Length: 275
Image (cartoon, rainbow, N blue to C red):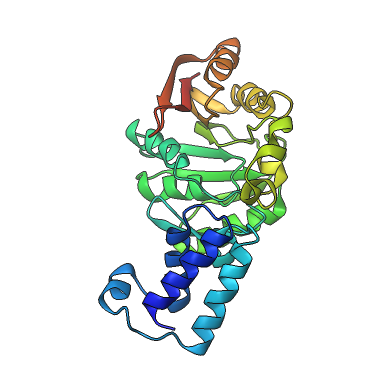
């Protein structure tokens, strides 16, 4: 099977399996299995896969047709220009979350102490440690399995952040210049309606925001009052329909200069405020 034949075969099998964006997934699987870049694939379409490569490629296709996320099969997701290890223990990093990181960077966080609440894979805090000069980072999560992934990402990327097991602020005594979070924010009743890749494979604990989706915002914002330094800032990723509610929670906790930033689809995505 050549590169060209593998891509054609893969696209057809994924299409028949009802997979969204089958060409993209087939190409990513092919490049992952053959350890090749897109340019090499284009320049050498007749290159023949080894028996091992072909077997792995076909196995990936079979598993993807069962709606297992591509990232769980390859074990990697790119975020902010870096490859992060992912597993079923963590939420797969999304491109929309890069807006949260970029907003902190735009506001000039040089030398800041930063807490990433519900850190998961550690992609947010490790990106900030990498791109913000002098930033000191801590990631907190209730899940020890998630923290193991975050710590491994820090090691693999050569980035230094502290990771702590904590039920929100339970084990956190320090105060910070900045708190960031992409918390669980999906309404409990909505989770069963999500696409299988999310509903069946992302950790439920990273999705469920309670009856109205706002449980974690209430707790994170209330606790931030005691864990932010003077003039400290909070940055929160939100669902498309949660802007007004999250802004109101911030106002009720005496935050000021509340601003909402939209994503690439012109939907509310990040709310930031100052204490």
